[in-house]
Length: 152
Image 1 (cartoon, rainbow, N blue to C red):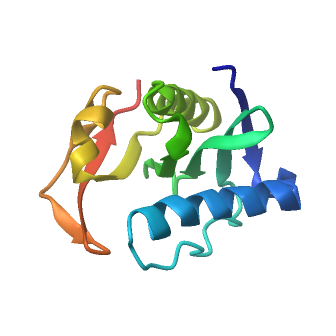
Image 2: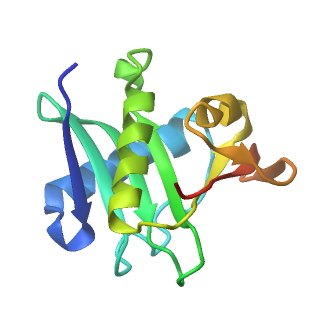
């Protein structure tokens, strides 16, 4: 599958791109996972944060949000990692994570990477160098685990 990867600051997103990424997040995290929570949390438009979009045939099929570090020692946070349900199974999730990691290292070199993983995806993120830190916990009714990848 040929993917056009786009790494954008919120000011670079078109209205359609913003709508599509919010619609995909809603479809997966709220509807598919039957989890009622406030996805639009104010972080999408904060200075420094980035949006990684994977587009195939004009459709958003993969997405991750990259949150800039809060200070010189804080990690970059990767979140809202999504692959559209119709293209799952094509290893697009791994390609998305590889791209997210490389973009984080480009924009914020020397910073560790952090994510709050749904617990059933711990092994998947482990394949990308993330290690669980702490115990599993419930977030919006779904078991999660915090994971960290040390800066290279």
